[in-house]
Length: 365
Ligand code: IPM
Ligand code: MG
Image (cartoon, rainbow, N blue to C red; front, side):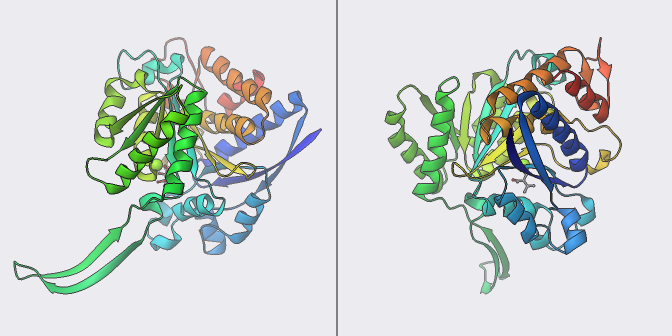
């Protein structure tokens, strides 16, 4: 019997509810597939600020590093809005990404056909996009700061305080994420779109140069380029034509929310953050901590359950178990079970809460 070590970070808001659903699903699928899990729960985010005075305790990072994979719920909430920026709950995410070297963020935007009526777009038959977002570089991790200048401007005013954040990418960082993009495209529909702002940004021009130089190594992949502003339009205009999108940290953050929304519910979307082969990956739902519905039973656990399925596939290589979860989720949707976020055109559907949805998936494994 194989035993995998999984660090579980429930976090804040609906995080604890949805991770507990996913853990039960893993246990059930494990029992069917001869896999055992050793779960270690750790604190990060707002709850860690309350307990330890900091969003990412060293022990949490240590447990994650010693695990085969990490399952995370969500962090943050209005309770911690006033804390100083370096101690905000979101710092826990950035610290985990940097600390575990998770440079590649996979955010699939998949529209389940049963949920097409929940999409804000009309007449869309299929959306199946994989966003590959660079996760440990760019403006998120570039030089940040403020300066104060006594310089007098032409209108006679003093320049005063200036704030800056820097977009910076090295050849190594760009090459490694672009190669991921090409490889995922090879395993899918063989289309890779590099999204950037090369009409303005020097860093984007470097991304394009490197992409063009790598393309001959992946002759089966059709590479094209889109400016990020145009891409945000085309995701609405022709979502079915995208396959893999590869992009920087900041653009990926923005476009993945948009891509998520057009699929019908951000409550359905899983994600994986991966580093070097052989190191633990981190899996989390794309939705946030949704503090407004925490504890009400309205949270959709499927994004976290699907994140657990990604964990089995990408970190543990347990493909059969991963497939089993995906099939159970599809069957659950086909049988009409709907949490409030995906109720859409509710004819013939069974309205359920977090527990009801979890139970329906468990029954179908
Ligand atoms: C995300 C989130 C985070 C990000 C925040 C919470 C730091 O928006 O994972 O997309 O910007 O990366
Ligand atoms: Mg985001």
